Length: 107
Image 1 (cartoon, rainbow, N blue to C red):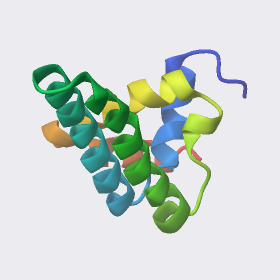
Image 2: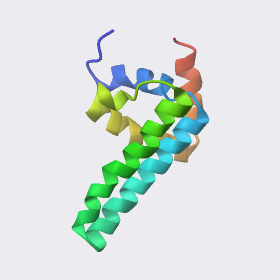
Image 3: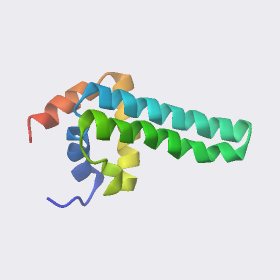
């Protein structure tokens, strides 16, 4: 199935983040990227360059060494960024595990 929308992408993204450690590393990178943006605004705009480096470092480590799959960023960079923060929000609300269970059953 071709990915035409975020709704098409989300199940693929969830299945690619099935392991709790992968999701934790993604969340760590996403939060640190936001911190880098805030620090850049407060201290020095050059810190903006650290935001994607930190975020992607944690995420790509998780994909290559924990999940052992290809990061979704390579094929769908915009949807992947949106999904990262959607997943972070669901994790903070305690709802991500149910998403994983729902889409693992539909493989």
